[in-house]
Image (cartoon, rainbow, N blue to C red; front, side, top):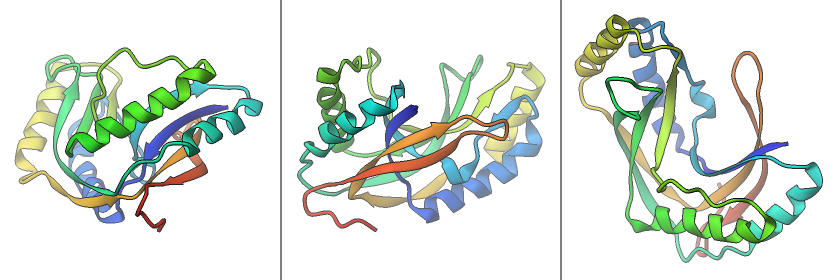
Length: 190
């Protein structure tokens, strides 16, 4: 099974991102756009595991006692690794230290199970597209469309829980199934 740990995003944010992607899609065919209904804020990509290991992963994640819900704002866009030779186009995530602390708690809880800790610093974002190639003219059209899109404010939400997901790769894009939900202290599941 291919699994990961993530936060869901509010439907209003999802709708705003969908509107942006609809405006940008015609500008670049060299981009593989993410299905907006599947966009999530990844805390930890675990990868392939044996199905019998999932129960132990759930038990470890259930031991995380995050103190309280926190606000997340979604605004701006950018590129990884950079805007001249991008591989990923993303929407920005603004939050205090809580999100990094949660990602760290997830990493720490999974290490005893032999799940390697991420070596790169946690960089919260929402993946909107992946580049098939870095055709200069297509990239210029995308940059122009982004500039013309106006304010890139997508909304905000309160994180109250996080989830363990299974990802099944299909020709039309990944399909996600929620395997478990973990509430923060003081949080109520939706």
